[in-house]
Length: 337
Image (cartoon, rainbow, N blue to C red):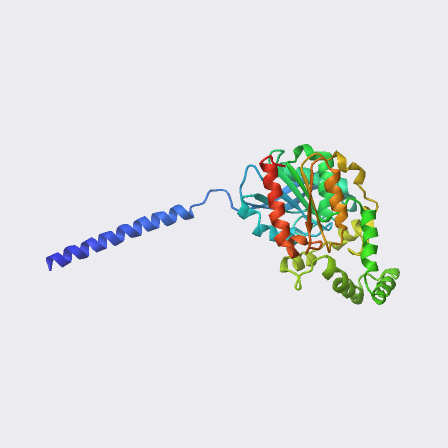
């Protein structure tokens, strides 16, 4: 009996000791700083001639040498359709930032049309860069579609702040883009083209029949070729700021217009000296040969062709897109480019 009592006492003491250690460990693991944690989200204040506003950013990872800022398309789409980058860049150890430009869903959306100009957007990117602590030793800028326009314009003015530039699925000329749209349109059946022409001549771009035709016959072939569009892509279309989009781009991806109608930077490309990756895709709304032209026109260029991709080749040709983009970033980082 005495022996049993000693054993029971020892067990109780040992259990209490383990509980104390466990509680202390738990407290150490769950301790937090006095600073409120936001999951990487930071609202960056920017200054414009129309006043101060805030834009949404979100940080993934930590890397003092590689920091990538994503520029979404539209204008006035959102970062959401680029959320697939979260599955690739952070696990490579890259620091990555998603970002909604001014006028987009998660950022301020002021009703002032003087704000929706390309030069003003360039200054916004520069202010975001400073706020996030990105510099010439670590700053990679990746822009898709309109974001590619913005990336080119930023590089032409502020490339001394850049480490590398990635232009994803964007031609260096809107007039050339409009001509290529006609090429794609000519490949459609005549009855469809006649229907589209009738709606467009009437300016009836919101007609459900027109929208359905453009979506099924054009978007599903040249924007994203996956049989079912990913939820983040659908979400970004729901959150589109249509006013800004139409003002700058035009009524649809199929009908170019707006303030970007005459934008053309082909002659300026040789002035870009930072390592540049230009990405094209077989089924893109953009002529892939034009992106190859970018790679040959800049001082340090590389071209990536996605044989199964469309305008969102980071969705429908991920097996080509991401390994090569990642390799480009690593090559620049290791001075192998």
